[in-house]
Amino acid sequence: MARRAAVTPNRHLHTTIPADLFIKLEQYLFSDVEGRVPQGAYQSFVSKQIWEFFNHRELDLSPYINGAMPGEFVIRGNAEALAALTILLQGETK
Image (cartoon, rainbow, N blue to C red; front, side, top):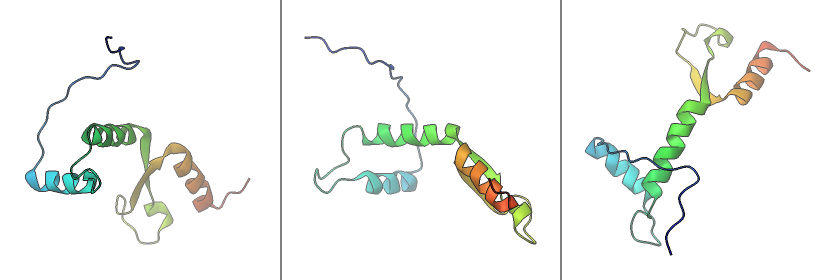
């Protein structure tokens, strides 16, 4: 029986990364149970990181920290969390 087509088709991506970075990634994804990096672990990791890159926003905390230079304290998170934090930092309550 033929395999069904994926609802969201995948596209192939081939890239290279520095060896030291690959070693860290491999160690992070390694499974002691399987004795190797599980099948699909690289794809899952890269996909998750790309989604996070596009869905998270940045908030510069320098206006809320005395003496901080712009860009010195920047955090990333989803838009709703950063909006809630901004409200708290500005001292507004609902």
